[in-house]
Structures are given as structure tokens and as C-alpha cells.
Image 1 (cartoon, rainbow, N blue to C red):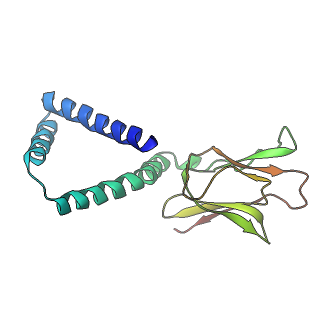
Image 2 (cartoon, one colour; image 1 turned 30 degrees about the vertical axis):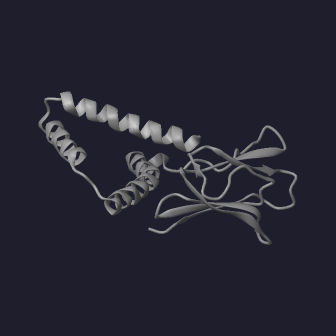
Image 3 (cartoon, rainbow, N blue to C red; image 1 turned 60 degrees about the horizontal axis):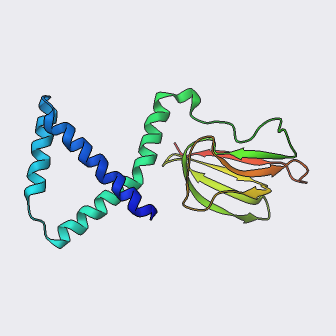
Length: 167
């Protein structure tokens, strides 16, 4: 059901964009509209459609990271948030994603207990450890500030956090 809603939303977005381009007097919009009309009137074979599908899937999968990276360059000072409340109101502090990205790993280790690794694009990742609860799964996309887990202050281990940058 979720996939159908997503596909419908994408089709609706394309249709709205096409309608806007069709009535626009802007030269770039007119050229784009002509290009789209040309592509829509062409007959495609199965291998071309499969190739187009793969290209669209790759583009859509990379879109959140691209948008996140573009937004981060506009506000470099506020690129990363805080991973945890400094003074939690209860014994369990909420743990937050310091930036948007994709959860690349969730697991348990001897050194850092329950942990989460979030990939923030090609250049950085954050690691959160000694968590009392985990609220995300591998391959899940998260937003900056989203609650990803919890840390119990009565734990025998300190909250673990690191930001690895591969610049």
C-alpha cells in the first residue's frame, strides 16, 4: 500500500510539473516541455524501460542525501545537532540523530553495548552506543533531531557517541 501511495505521489508531482511547464512562457520551461513531449511520444522497448526504471530508482534513493548535503552547505554552523539531552528530565534520556541520513547498522558489541550507526552521505557517519533502547532499523532513513533510541542514566556505562568524518 505504501509503495502505491508513493508511486501515485511521484506521478502526481510529474503531472503538475508537466502542466506548469506546458503553460509557462519561460524559454527554459518551453524547451523542457518540448523535450518531455518528445520523450512521451517515442515508443520504448522493454530493455529501455528497465534501464530507465533502474536510473530513476538510483536517483530517488540518492535524493535525500543530495538534498541533505545541499541544505547542510547552506548552514554549515548548524550542520550537526546534539546527540542527547545534557540534562534529561527522566532517568532515560532520548538519543537524537545529529544529522539526516540512513541507518547503516544496528547491533550489540562488547565495547559499546547496543549501538546505532548512521551514514550522513559519503563524508561522515555518527555512532551512538550503550543505548538502553533502539527505535530504528538498518536501512531506515532518519532526519536531524529524530529520536533514534534511549540511554538510561543508571547504566554502568557512559553514553557513547562519535562523529567520523571522511573528508
